Length: 434
Ligand SMILES: Cc1cc2nc3c(=O)[nH]c(=O)nc-3n(C[C@H](O)[C@H](O)[C@H](O)COP(=O)(O)OP(=O)(O)OC[C@H]3O[C@@H](n4cnc5c(N)ncnc54)[C@H](O)[C@@H]3O)c2cc1C
Image (cartoon, rainbow, N blue to C red; front, side, top):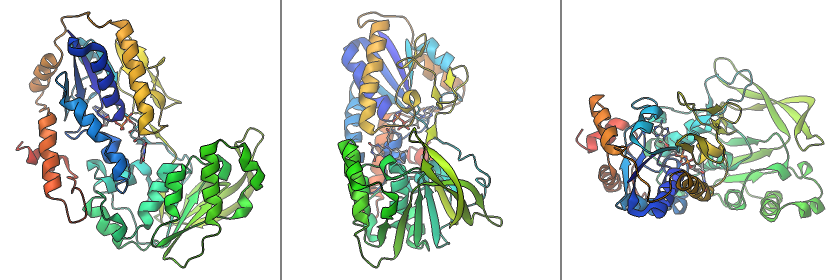
């Protein structure tokens, strides 16, 4: 028998568990650990609440969790409740799938002013992440800015501009719905350091902006290269750029405007005691396609500024770390002897949910090459881990506990919502009678 511990129950953790199960059959037990008693990582806490069809991917993970060789062990923070070295004593291999939950810093003066928040915080707030339940983003000003030109920036801008009715059918948490309903924001500037050809926004997410009830996307066609230049783009990117160009033809009188400000590099955030505006430097493309400052500056008013410029994985004691890449140092997923990384903790914060599947399968293949199916060891697996946790007063939860939490959330759902999420760890544990 082999025992494997996967740390993190997001997409990468689940795809790896699925792959290990396929490779080892009943010759292995796979434990998926998570710091929370609720699984699925960013499927619950990241993917936008109005994108329910995407969240349905968790049904596939349910199947993995329900299979006999796989267990979910929640409420255990690796690095705090148990170290990686300790896990390696109990398990034949440890696979770190902890994602990249920390916002990258802007690195400009004023970024610590009240009103400046990272997307992990803002997204966590509207998705019911317990650490951000009290965020209370300032929605009292008329101007907001979103820094970044990827899909997370689009999510943030869209959520800020939707009407209450447009959240029908979503699982946005109640506190965010109420606050957004009273929001005074009427202009959202989306700042990108480079131009329309360099966006990392996908057509579906961009297209949604053209159909919002009370918000209108605005682009300036002078920011675009000649239309013929679009031919050189790869088809998906060409589609995105075409959608952006079409925004120029939209005419409507709507409550909120979303202004795409390209070739705009934030260089400082200023205000009296709170963010009031961003100082932006106009840029142009350099020979390598990077952004080069032109020296021309201007101000973009914003009392709420959300930076969507990427994430990093927190280091864990004793685990090799790539500081520049903000992820674990690894060679095709292998960090060291019997220690591996998958998903965002391996590759950095790029790609879609599906990208984590081949990633997990590749690492499972590596593990199978290192300790072939059919081989065994006398490591104790979960038995050893649970004894150690008990001695430390840590109470792990299991998959049935998660199903109880889920059923309670579904039962509490307000009309038009599939569930009303618990946003505090105490409430999860209360549901379980702990
Ligand atoms: C705002 C946002 C929106 C997104 N929207 C989409 C989308 O619409 N479509 C799409 O395809 N992709 C989307 N993505 C990308 C997708 O969410 C990621 O590709 C995917 O979640 C990465 O999987 P992961 O398993 O590596 O990390 P995560 O999903 O972050 O999972 C990591 C898990 O590890 C756990 N963990 C962390 N630290 C510890 C620890 N020390 N001990 C124990 N457990 C720990 C966490 O609780 C979490 O459950 C989005 C991402 C973000 C940030």
